[in-house]
Length: 271
Image (cartoon, rainbow, N blue to C red; front, side, top):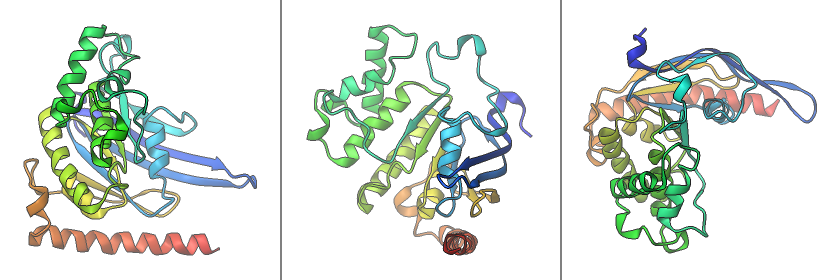
């Protein structure tokens, strides 16, 4: 176990159940334990219904009904929202506000922080430049491509300077070419911001491209099936990486493990 100075998040024995409309109790997550280090990128994937979204909602503070413990070693209880959020989330769907321009969208994300208007504006400008949208700060969402709108959402989350950045399949709605471009941009941004990230995805190739570690979950109830360290270093190239033998071998190995859980999930759904 890493010392507290190196840990951003500690999850121990997490369990989550919910009750269906037919009053059946369904276990979504069972005995999930994970240590996340500061500035580490963790990709979480598994079959549909394995509890990935439940995990993200709990970490985002949107669901407080669970058992187990979640510890934030770096949180200062007396100053939790002074200049940054505990967590910020980038979702799959476009969450920009169409009546606000790009700069206003980013500034809006900081409304709960104890920083003045000028400081919020400076942060917005900094993070818009970081994601390559400084020339579009007065544009409205309908004037941007899907990839550009998702960059606005990324800038808005980063501007809150969260202790944990949560990303819920943020590139799933984009075309394949745009996804690879933004994957490379995310690698550059995280290298510069040293963000701590939990990245939910269905795309194994994306997980291997972006993460320091990949957490593969079982079919429901979601447990950790395996955790793999990704040996490519932080300064990797998203375009060239997929052509390497090491990437291909790791992808095939994890696909076999994932296929086992997808098959189990299909069996469960057919009952």
